[in-house]
Length: 404
Image 1 (spheres, helix red, strand yellow):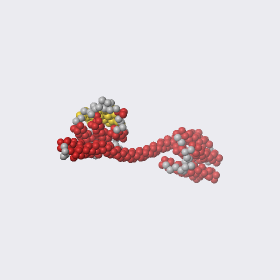
Image 2 (tube, helix red, strand yellow):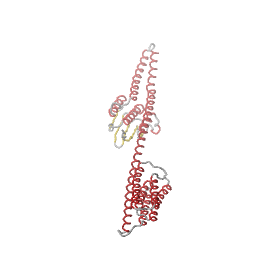
Image 3 (cartoon, rainbow, N blue to C red):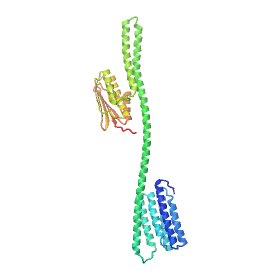
């Protein structure tokens, strides 16, 4: 036997106490209005007392325990019926009415619907047996009608109580399930926020590594070449002034290229849309790209408003990286960019450059970084390219609704 502490059990327990108190009150009236034997009073007290004690506890989850518990309750009621027949008392069936009703109530906590219906049927049969065995004095009313009316009244009362308690317990279970679901969702949301922070930190680290590599491969190479040209100029500035002047001019050109590399690295380090909209940031990026590379850019930007910051940043970085790759490797003269939003956010970047084998060039740092950015937001990135046929980068991102 286990003691239950859930709210549904406590609520039914209070109702049981009320019914047990009513049964005791009925028996007190019987004692005051008649002269029952001591054995009859003791038997009734034992039946009601033990029945009430069983209400303080419920069996465990094993079916055998539940069946034994219910059978014990029916046994106590049958004991009361035998007392009625043996001692020829007049009102014990009134308390049996309440005890049978209590069994129906307890079945709602123990069994499923099929088990509850079985207990309901047995309770009605038990009460009918008590009514049929009850000795009644004749002469005032029709005994058959009285018995039928009592059995019918008990049946209606039991069915009503069963439906009401079952509906109440179902509502309690639904509410508890909803509370558990909300708690699980809150825990999941907290885990997702922590995961998002880790992803953001990882993305920041990857971005720093990429920028460090860009500086090393771009700016570092340019400055190293500039140092070589300056050293050559120092070697020939007395013996061959014209040649030294050529080295200085080359050094100046390399300095200008290094300055461009520095500006690009600084641009990568700061948030491109921190103080401006995605549309403004993209228009500036495309204008600078077209002015620097002389590559024609045709852009349609139809999904730049009301986007979360991380989505806008991802779109900007993918376009920025794509343009960097185009300027370095594609030898393209035209670039077409199309950004739109319907059920999903779609981005298409195409160029008319020399292309490459897409299946053999997907592990580069830039391409891999773009794919990771798309995947981090639940989207995907595909590359279509063939030698001599240009390149097309397609990005699909879900429309993300921000949680508060």
